[in-house]
Every structure is written in C-alpha cells, then in structure tokens.
Length: 352
Image (cartoon, rainbow, N blue to C red; front, side, top):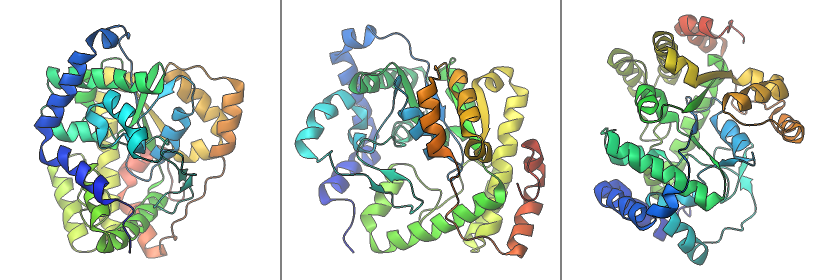
C-alpha cells in the first residue's frame, strides 16, 4: 500500500515533534520580523470548535470556514504551522494545491481538499508541553493574526478538540474567546468512534507514515496509538484505558463520553465566565433544524448571519446520516447505562 503521506511530508513533520523549542523560536523570529504588520491588526476574539471526535466538529468548522469573515487553518498549513507567513509564500512552489476535493480517509462522506479547514493548531499546544504561560499566549495571539493575514480575513476560528481538557487555560489566555462544544447522542457517537478506530487501525498497520502523522497532529482518539483524552479525572481516564486495553471499545468510549461531558458541564456550572464563553450544540439539532441552529451559533460567535449563507449551510447540514454500523442491542444497553447522568444534562433519552 502506497502511503498518502509523501517521504518529504513525513520528514518535514518530524521536526516540530522532535524539536518543539526550535520551532517555537522560529515562530518568535517571524513575529519580530513582522512586528509592525502584526501590531496593526486589532486584538482577536477567536472562535473554537471543541468536542469529542465524531461529534460534528468537522462539519461545524467547515461551516464557519465558509463564512466570509472567518479565517482557519487548512491541511496544507502543516508542517509550516509555526511560521505561516513564510510557509504561505513557500507552499505554492513545493506543493500542488489545486487537486479536486475527495472524500476524506474517514469514509464518512465529507469531502476535503488542500484548502479545507483542518485541526492544526493542536501542534502549537503540543509544542508548549503543558506550559501555557503568558509567553505562549503571546505566541498564540500572533499566530492567529498571521493566519488572518494569510487568509485575508478578520476573524480567526479553529477546530481544537483538545481544548475540552484545558477550557480554563483557553479562557485565561483568551478572555473574549467563544467556544462551540458539539455533543452527540452516545449510542450513535460510540458506534462512530468504534468504526473509525477499526478504520484507522487498519490503515496504520500498513502505513507507518499515516500513523506518525496522526501522532504529530495530536490525534489519539482512534488508531494504533489510541489513548484516553480528557475524561474528567484520572480515575475515569484509568477506567477508559483499562477498557481499551481489554478490547472493550464499547465500555471505553461510553465511559469517556460520560466522564468528558459531565466534567465540561460541571466546569460551566462552576464558572459563569466559562459558561458565557461556551455554547453547547447538539448534533441532532444541527442536522434536523440546521437553519435555526446555525442562526443561533453565528451571533454567539459575534458573526452576522446573511440569509444566503444560512440557506446554503442549512442544505449542507440537513439530514447528515451516520455511516457507522449500528450497535447490537446489548451494546446499546451498555452505553445507555454508562452514560445516564451526562445524557440527562443534554435532554437525551435512550434513543435520542
């Protein structure tokens, strides 16, 4: 099997993983070389989409990315993510950016090309190694401005599922941030995660470069390097890890769903500022009543909602169907039992 990741892409993407300090220094150098240009851009109120994988995050960031004010990362931004101004000048010379859209490797009906929004900002957070201090905040703010320069837009948005586990850090660094948190009924959500784990595990078994690329982008939700993400606490994380190790994907993903979303809702309840900065969006509402739901999302983000934009996005969102095989009745019952507390917080019954 020929890898989708070229030899040169694999070589270039190794740098940020192995030498994060060097690349953060390069980002600072680009900041200083473009100080006047960056200073001329007003402070940015970023928009993030942060949810568990397979909750609708890609559909949401694609919708935002089509808005005329929004600038996002694209798949082509990596590995030049630390120096986007330089990379944007180099990229057209070394890569083909006009390939037609194609269904992404997930096999879920979503088509992408080199200009499609993608979850790339996570690479910066990985490089920080948990040190989210004021200097990192300055790097992040400059980075967001540089993306807007490259895209010729006025508002920055990013898909960043890892933010679920660092909501308080995000709010501290960016007090005017807006975070959309999608949620999906756990039965359908767990089924989708199980399908993608099998899908990516099969791909990675024959394509080492694809496995490395997932790791370098901070994607551990499924595949051979799968590990629990934010689960609300070490105890739940340990239970999820034990279930995955035992091959019980149903229990592992159900426990993660319960722990993650219950913890998020508890954080929002305890912190009025965080509650105001976040918006919960049920995937079922987004697909069943897309126009009304998008009309609520955009003002929350401080964006206008033109009728033609709403109409077009409503058509795109309506009726998205799951591509995952349904769980067995016994597995459905296990998911329902494991997620009862968090399901109630979102008005989910046993079937939706």
